[in-house]
Image (cartoon, rainbow over all chains, first blue to last red; front, side, top):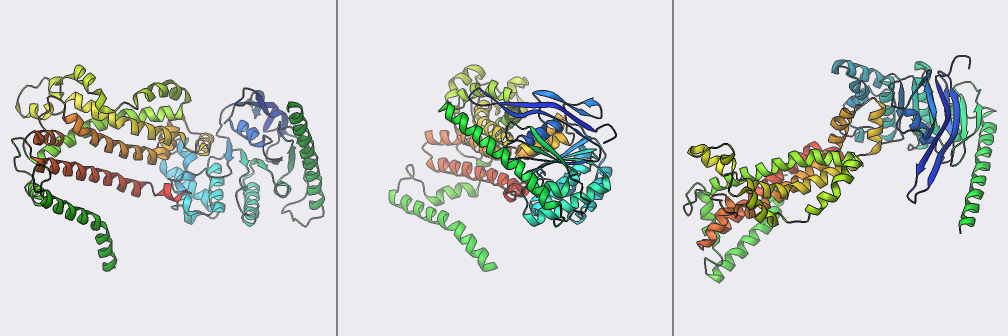
Length: 268
Length: 279
């Protein structure tokens, strides 16, 4: 962490209005820097605002307060340098794989031949070049997510935001895709911000793990993972690290449960 | 293989054949051509579709006139309802601004518009608009009366609008989000995401709208100033007690409507296979 961070999140907050007129705080005063080429995982219980945090960084949602700074510049709109991969159903079902991957370059105005060459080249990266004429519904869930990842890469972003990209996959496919993602990351050296609720996934992938609290989402702890890659799940530090993170999450869950119960009691 | 095809055709034709047999039996039983004309008599009218009927021109010509009228009102409805529906489905403000107002007009049956429409347009037609007063051009243009086109337009407008709004509103948010992150402009969002994603629903609305437009035809052609079209042929034949022509007209409306519907079904099957296969 010598150079300037590529991303700086400063006192970011997000409130959502509810149906009964009150306001719910989803993300509360989140501050952290992300250094270039870092692989950062954000773990937290479901509904803790980690997806909202990512959507704000992607420029899809406006922050209630606070700033997002990319390479020294404040941002509030989607930027071609910041790509995003969603959990599922992000491929256009009426377009084949090639035309899906070519979507980013198409929006940026690249001519057909150029974007198709580029799309093919990226499909080759995940061994999917033979499926370029297939449609999303003809692919397995794992293949669809491979396509979704290279589609984000085809715009050549510096930062890749990933919102539980493997959350809908079966355990075995998930492990395969984790390996593949690391391979791509090591080769292309992107900065990755990866949201997950899987503690194992975070330890396997991340340089740094940020643990978020239950709603309103705050950062409870930041843990550096210095195991060398490829990481073995049998590594002596692996288990204790998982225990440590799970303990933090468990304490948090118990606290938030007590809070909810107390509020309920007071209201009732 | 041939056997299965034969079986399928037989299944398809079974009920129509039973119906024809029932009709023939009842016609023989009633034995009054005004109450129920015979099957053979009506079929005879179809064997010579270009023959002049009750001084109103041939059956095929009247069908053609009606078809042009329906398409005029219908295309107008498509051109207005689709863009409006896309805007209302996408922009919440436009929806809130217009939906309450448009909902007031939705329940009014197209026929209830007739007195107003006549007061507005009278017997004015495209011929009046282009100031043509004689010749073949007059004959063609005078057949497109504004009042008729309006009635058909009203009938087709709402199904198309409703389906378009619904189609756009149910486009998965992830598709829009991922396009925005990939650098889509607002124009790209409309052209490359919203329209293709909602087109199955839009086409479905267009299919329903065409059915309604075709159904509004008879009421439209009963308006004063009408001198041709299947709807008018039916009402005119009725005054002459030519029930056989009435039935022939009804069958024509049914068959043409079914063919138009089939056309849409083919588009749906060819173009939108992905909707059935995506979950």
